[in-house]
Amino acid sequence: MHWQSIPVSVTRNRRARKVWLRMRAGSGLEVVLPYRVSAADVPAILDGHRQWILARFADLAARNEAPGQDPLPRLIRLPFCDRTYHVCRDMGARTELRAGEGVLQLRLPPGAEMGGISLLQRWLVDQGKRWLVPVFRDLAGHHDVEVSKVQIRNQITCWGSCSPSSCISLNAKLLFLPSDVVHHVILHELCHVQHRNHGSKFKARLREFNPMSDQHEDFLRKAWDMVPGWTKMNRKERAL
Image 1 (tube, rainbow, N blue to C red):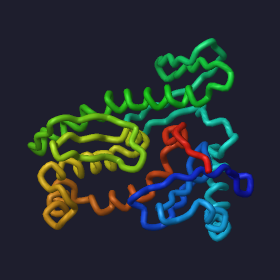
Image 2 (cartoon, helix red, strand yellow; image 1 turned 135 degrees about the vertical axis):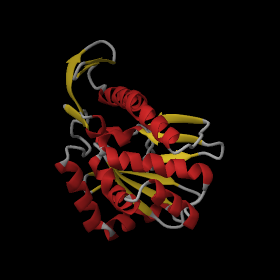
Image 3 (cartoon, helix red, strand yellow; image 1 turned 60 degrees about the vertical axis):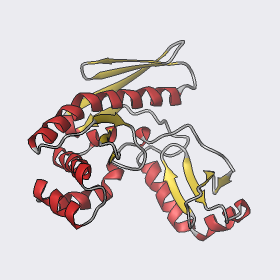
Image 4 (cartoon, rainbow, N blue to C red; image 1 turned 120 degrees about the vertical axis):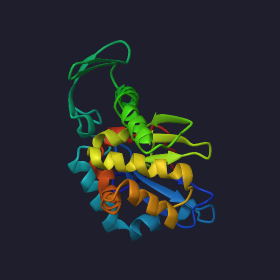
């Protein structure tokens, strides 16, 4: 489905209580519907949010992340580890990525851009294991917090998480943020080892670990826009 030439995909969520609209890099507009809302209502819903949709789509286009634009980056900057990589592309019979010092060489068959995106996302996770895990272990040891496991993932909606068994997951996209903010996210998850919710005891502990936690939380609310679109792309779309 298209609306004003913008690709639209529709998903349903049993837990959704209202309609959600999300403008996604590379794929366009996603509409999340509760099961009580009919798909036939989608065109009217989009018309009612016309101004917001067009503004968000213009933002994507300005960042070269709109559908139809080349989704592959030419340059990748990772502020957390102060590294910059030039992305070079050439044609090949199969999709592959070779990483060198400051250079990522992508070889792609014609029309295999999304395969290149998947390789870059896996490379980003590997970089997260290289750079984020040692810092995590240092902070956990410094604050005497024991965890069962730490893993790096390309998470879609959160910067980090802590399971009931004290397994902590960190988002590889943290590499695009400043180091002090990344430290805050790690400390946030370490506090969850002892305090599973965000109650007063959790907040007091977090402020003990990081007196700037309130400021860093404010930063994180806007930080998603600092993450390039190719890291967020997902081939699993359902069209209306």
